[in-house]
Image 1: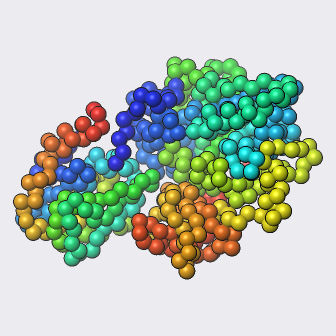
Image 2: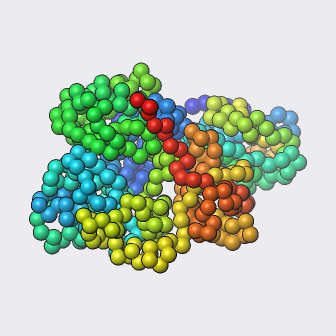
Length: 383
Length: 129
């Protein structure tokens, strides 16, 4: 069992004292002292699936690009086509190495003409910033700023997230579509960015507030109070992981990394290779070549354990005739589906749905079945 | 957090509660709390031998898997089958939810285990509180 005591070198969000005072279990996540479990992972997970939960995701990084060359910079850095964005719109994208593997996956927000914000992962912040400087160095008319420490980022997620947040803002949240954002007053703070984004597979919002401790703690408290009637729970990274896994979303260092390319990860639809408006970007040539050569040799699939056992991160996957064919990238019991699920890379010829494979779990071969991703998809609202 | 005074403990966070020549084995409240929501327990069968300090099974929470270490050497005389469907009973009450019962060859084995007070001291040192 690991020691939960924080090492002094760990970085802290502005809500660290709040988490520690509330007896959340803390872990080192990519160098950050973060809550993994606030009030029971399963309870938190179910709160988000059925009502509402709130996460401190201030460890995420934020890079802003300004100037007449900002669109060109984003277009060169990221694989999706940012020219398609309207002001107030966001898109899932990724920064790639020249060989088509991942620097990081990102969400690009168009703040205004000549002003873009990309939200990056916590564990890759320094690497990402260095990469951005290297790629856009010498590009004219763009100014880049790392605003990662300027915001406390809260994710309010779940079917009652809108009702919860609506109590705290005069902005009509029903006017914000999925993957759009606006600015409004939240908890008396002006000009707060309110985005209908998240990493849970549920409806929800991410808000960006000033990162001083007093403001952060006050807003955190007001969100919990606003969600009380829905039995809101503060949620940790444990639930964040199981929620995104059920939703089939990639996590850097697991499903995506510098040794996995876009097509293997099943994210080809976000890589715009042929749009005239997109043009060239870092990694494009490699992706074109991979496609011309017949596509990827391995593929990310969903697995569902058939026999008793939990496949976890790093466990090897075998064909039924005993060949080692791949590895689980993320695996866990699914609190909502009540099955043991995993994502894994396997050769394309063994990637078809219903293919049976075996996962080696602590020396024993346990059968699993390839299933379609995502494992969980929320029902579309009829209204 | 209360650790029953009559039990003996291991540094791997198991307890044993003796009743005659056999003892019930469980994991401590500290262990269940550290693991979080327990969803899976893998236990030996009645008649299997367990060896002090060696693994006899595992317990898994949503986020982690943890080996179970036998506090004593002996033979498994009973397995708590209720845990197959309700492993969360361990979270509810770790102090009374036993996993297996073991008949001891030699009762002197217990001397090497921690008392409740020693175990509490050990946890305090381990967690730095």
